Length: 435
Ligand SMILES: Cc1ncc(COP(=O)(O)O)c(C=O)c1O
Image (tube, rainbow, N blue to C red; front, top):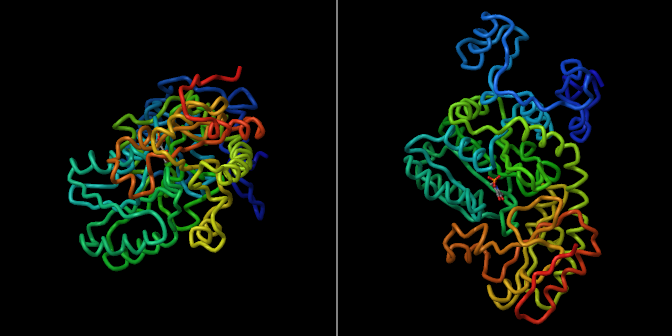
């Protein structure tokens, strides 16, 4: 146990992430032997001496290399804080990466990382569809900083398409290959290893710096570990499964020490990190992340099947229902270890029919976001992806009749019964609530 505090492996013993989430990176002796980490609600940390303060600043601002065995000290909570640091170390270990950085939101994590890695004239290639906020950042904000963004369709051809676009725009200008896999809300998988191979080829040919960044919000950290397939950066909206209780907004990035150093530098100066209390909530939530995600996926599998058999449903997008002969199934089996709990399904009758169904659910709550303990439904076209032009969305399969469902921890029979929302005849709804 004592060993686990400092290393996630000991001799030939490798600890699993679920075990690390309960004790790694915390030393009770430093906190009155409190078994659980306290909340370090402090903005600033006291130095033992002026010399120590100077040494800490030299390290954090990169003014000198650390001495043998020297680790940085705590200075000020915009730079770091014990609650954030413990969470970052545990998630980095989970992702099999070196360093983590926590942010005020998933969007703060994505935008700070992209601003740290990209400069005017650089090119970012991204899969589409992606979460609406990320889409807005890439297409409306980054171009204002002189960054060129080119989309390729998520899925089987994404790696070839990125290669082809890189050749067209000048491969030496390409700095980031960005993937959201599976994509929100089409649940299409993109081959991380194939994109990492494109990155390797481009690096070999041009010697330039290139980052493969994966938004792992939908299946990570439990069912997908992008680092094992060659990703350099793993990004999350921690608001979703990692936080898991719909009671916080946060983001996190994990990756190698070199890239994280640049991202952390920008986080410090932009002030995009999160609060100690959020760090504490994230630590608490990480302890149950695996249990929650596995149970939610089990329930989602039952619901997806019921939806696929429903006469009003024209299409169900869910990894657990993929045709075993399809390339997407082969990729999902190779890259992921579970189907997750996000289901998208389409009903005939467009937006009007979708809205009347959304208004009739009783147990599923009508709200955006995903990954919480409660089940949610929403309409991607007019809500989470309203930022993206409608014609563009339709080319990604996001149609007016598409509903997105995030499955929580309610009893499966209550959720299955709630699918009667699909059967009742359209008309005014009361949006009744169970009590
Ligand atoms: C896949 C994905 N990435 C990023 C984000 C942004 O995260 P946040 O809302 O925490 O800023 C979201 C939010 O819905 C998301 O679904």
